[in-house]
Image (tube, rainbow over all chains, first blue to last red; front, top):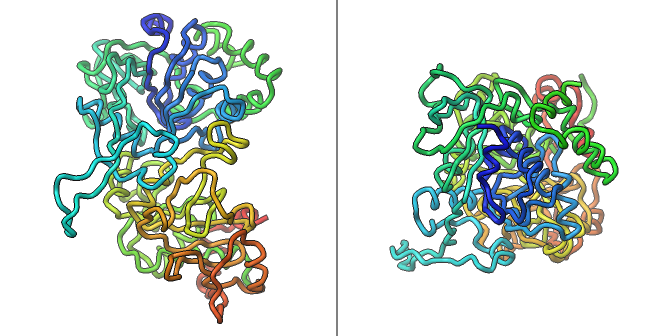
Length: 276
Length: 235
């Protein structure tokens, strides 16, 4: 499958989870394919980085579910920041642990999971749909503890990027952190994996085989497909390009130029353009 | 290398002191001066602290890998209470409610900041301290626009200290509101009161923040931050 064929399976209004973390191992080739598509009214669930930035800039993300939006080495995601300040995107703001718990609940087919995170905070005020539950088990004082009932974050689709995958849909990460890519896949009706290389067999410790083929619906090979986010050990973050992205994002005219130069064509055209 | 300790060096040591006596827990400093503080603490009086490389590895005092701590495991350690984070704040009130999410009306903020990150969970699960490099009434304000880290009036578990460029503060009043614990060398109590946008509890006698020892200065200057990047965090 090509990135465009993957995106052709998505529909308007879907809730789409995107793996990785901040500006790390993001399935950017798939995100770029969404940007080229007519998809709209998307809800994006993500530990947000430039994936969310691009989909907010294109106007396709109607709502973002996240605990932050950052480029790591650049603290704030510039498109997200601007869209929030201009009132152009809805936000479901959650503690990072609540987002994890929502994915875990969805992956386990549970309606919710209890968690302390969020208690007393503004998160419960800006998300009035969130409820608390009282533990049916007494604590040492005889009263059941009150906890946030974090609802399952069910996804229509998940997009994640692996270092390696095979044709059957098994996926391997080789960097320091799996992030929550396995949970994104399990929480989703359909999970799509992009990877640096499709391989006939895997090398390395079996613990790096994060995704199995029962969790994955399709694989697409997208070399340098996480660019400009990091995909160690294959490559680090392209800091120079990320800085260019952030500068362009700060000015509408500069962004139109950036988009015309890098985002107008297909993935092959993007990869050619970033080499120049 | 000699010379009197700079303000940044006083702050490094004040941050280090936050982790004194914590034992084998994960220290999560955010910002350069807290990071130098945590590493200084481990090299001196808190050798059991666990520290990460900022990604997924635990590094020992010599820089070798001693463990693996991806985000999922950080979340478990923090929920278990086995962590002491030192976070920043764009706004903080006298109960220690902290805002790093957005300034102004949350629905359409004047300034979108980072987001709540893990602050709500951190503050109800484990010890939390704060580092404020620019002590001002803009930061220390009567009411925060979005409560990220919760304060003592909203169920904070264990807020330890707030280290700023001027002073060390804690929540040692009967109502658990912010109190001046010490002023850094050269800072007057009145300076701190004037730079705080809410009534600050001030004891009759306010000590001066402990200056770095000669050994601590040596570690900071020659081993932890030989390039002197710490000074820029205060400018």
